Length: 150
Image (cartoon, rainbow, N blue to C red; front, side, top):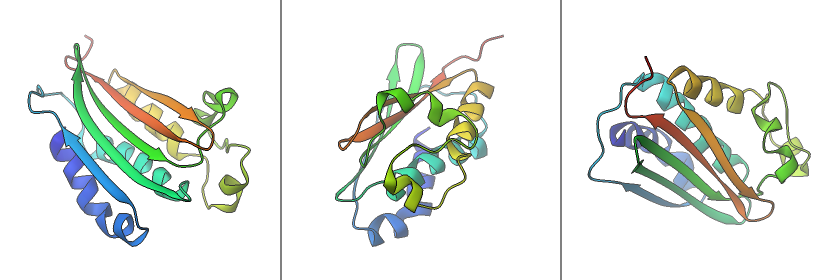
């Protein structure tokens, strides 16, 4: 999992730096192996990093953290962006849905990135969680079971 994170960070290092983001990456040492499609997870993570860059105005922080949580491995992507209202947090995973924020409508997007992230995670027997406060930022967490369900 740490390798996937470092690959995505390296692939996106130029836009991260060009946009003036402070980057923090923390990968736990004791991570178990997880059965996963590296390309698909990389795409899910890339979508989250891209959203963090697109929807951050002043608070230019991007934090990625890989950790173990019980019988799961998590990859959290946090920003200090525009945030998402509580009532919209479930809707953002619907195809073509775009939140009702002016920055969202000023920013190019199709409304397919987060549904794709959810689909990838569900295909791995996992899920994607979101914690967000408007004006303060968001944390999207990819949750993968250490052992896939049979």
